[in-house]
Length: 255
Image 1: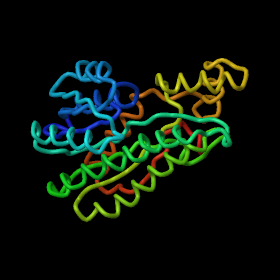
Image 2: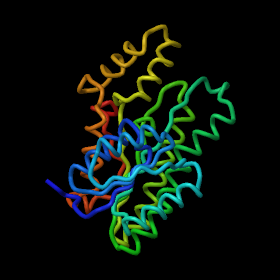
Image 3: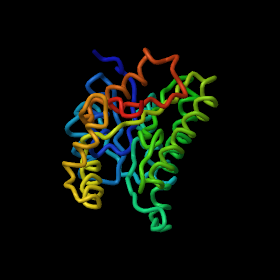
Image 4: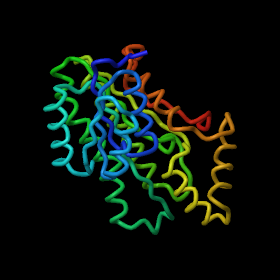
């Protein structure tokens, strides 16, 4: 099924995990794709694995200049942007009194400012087209939280705020804006985080992941392709009357 034939999707944080799975999903359904990431090797690998008409662009989402240059390159090559998946994000956490200001600033720059900039740059393109879908990747940490995650939760909660406001602003132009809130997903970033948090609790990373899996109704972690499927749905015609939502894709963790 080629639901996205003739469409162009832009995915930030495309070099691995949910971003890579999302590129592969859209290309498998007929889309052309632009992969944006600072990890050039991983980004090129994503483009090669996805095949089709797929472009890898070096882009640090913290930089307005780099994001603008990426969108200019996309428009020069493809002439349109039908779907934006603002997925780039990083994790950091620790005791509240020990959050260093530089770590906080960088987390905000990637997780929050990066999403805002992507939305800002896609909006006028889609407004001119009178169509488009924006999917911002938030987190279950925006809906619930734990100790030692204040900074991460704050940035991911902010993504929902951007999503809701953008949905109201862009809706009259035929553009939908939604967020997904993934639960713990089997990615390299989550496995790294599991190791760090597990170490503070006297357990291995795999033991911590098993504990988190058992917190869900489904008793397992998500796989990246499962998140990509929900993202593709939100970009499809089946979701044209769905906007301003922050959908929990967490196996029943936040109930």
